Length: 193
Image (tube, rainbow, N blue to C red):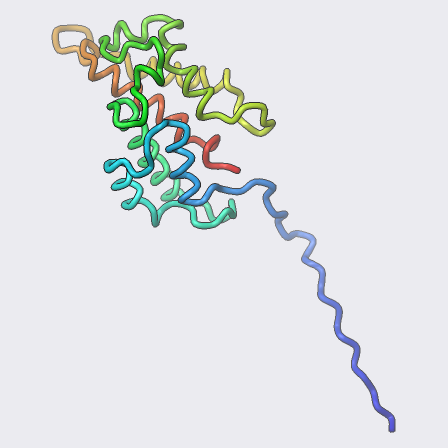
């Protein structure tokens, strides 16, 4: 007699000032690795790339949560992007750099390889079309990215004048190409999902 059943308490609602969950997330370490391989045509198991991946793997994002993103993760992404771009430019990929950057002369000195908008387009446009997703609202504006990459090229090709000028060699052209490639490949355009 007189049996009383206690009611189950209601689950409290989240506090009004709790941050909203992000609508976007990060690619995880293996997604970053395979995405970079896909857009550069460099095999993810290429020895130099795999060595860097294995070195930085623990620094790369392991979960999709944006709240856990750290500066160390961006550094790891940058290192991996640089290695993929180096493999592409050094012809260690599945296609040669001359095919990827059709018409761009990697054997020219930097002072002549980047001296016109048409030559720069031969370098930048293939990267934009491969490394930026098309027809997605939250992707960066390709024209804005192109302006930034052109500014980077301007800075990297502003070399000293004289017999020891560093822009007088094809090596500088390849270095600038790797830097331009890594600036797009290591950006949020590939990192965010």
